[in-house]
Image (cartoon, rainbow, N blue to C red):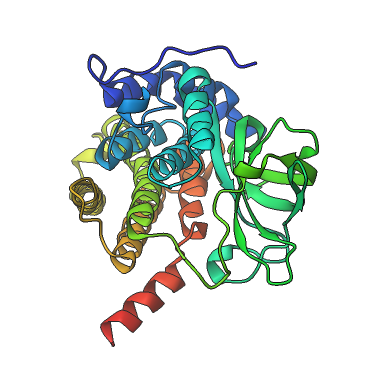
Length: 386
C-alpha cells in the first residue's frame, strides 16, 4: 500500500511556490530518466510527497480546491523541469476537476478523491486502442464491459496509457455487449486481477511518461463503477469546461518546455564568447533580435494561458473552438521557440548531452494531443464560414 502523504493546505502553502521548489530536484531526474527510457517514478513520488496530487480535489472534500489558473501555473512550472511527470499530473488535475461535478455515484467519487488525498493516488483515462486510434475521431471502442451478477467484466487493450506504471485507477472507455451497445467509462482499480501492463512505450519525446499498453482480461468491477453509459451518438465530445481544462493544461506544459529551452539559451548566450568575437554572443544584434522573437512568442503564450484560465475560473470558459485554437497557438509557438533556440546554437544543440536536444523532442509531442491541429483548423473554419 502506498504510504500516506502530507496534503497540501492552501491556507498556509503556495502550490506554485511548492512546484518551483521541486524544479532543482526534478530537472536532473528528468534528464536521467529520458536518457535511460525509465518511467518518471521518482519525480512523481516527489510531486506526491509535496502534496500536489490532490490540488484540484474540492476544498470541502479536503483537497486544494484549486482552479484552472493555479493548476496551469503549477503544471507550467513543473514542466520546465520534468514534462513527462507533469503530463501525468496534468491529467490528474483535469480528471479530478471533472469528477467533482460529474454526477457519478457518490461512493465512486469519494473513493477516487480520498485515494488522492490519503495516498496521492493517480488516475487517468484509458481511451486509445490499436484498431480505433483516438476516439476523438469517432468510432466504437473494442473494449467490452459485460454485465455479470457481481457487476461488470471488462476486456480489452488500451494503448498510449500515460502514467500506466503509477496509476491507481484507470477510467476505461468501453462499450457494453448489449444488442444496441452503449459507451462510457468504467472505473478500474489498476491493482485488480486481470489488469496487466505491457511496456511498449519507446518514443521520440516524453520518454519517461510510461505510456504503455494496458491489457484488461475479464477484469471484475462493481456495478456502480460503470459511471457514464450512454448511446454512442450522445455526448460526442467533452463539454466546454472540461475541454478548457484539458487544452489549457496541455498548452501550459509545452509552454513550460519552451521556457526551459529559452532559459538555457539565455545562459548559453551570456557565457559563450567565441575567440573571433571576443565578447559573449548575447552582445550581437542578430542574436538579440532572434532571442527577442522567442520572447514575443512566449509573451503571447503567457497572455493566452492566463486569460483562458481566468475566464474559465470566472465561469465563462472559452468555446470548444476557441480552446482548440488556444492550445494550437500556444503549442506551435512553443515548438517555434525551441526550434529557434536550436538554430541559434547550431550543431551542439542537437547533441545528446545538450538539454535543447531533449526539449526539442519533448515539445514536438504537443502535436499529437487531442485536439490536433487539423481538427482545430477545420472546426474553426467551419464555424467562421457558418
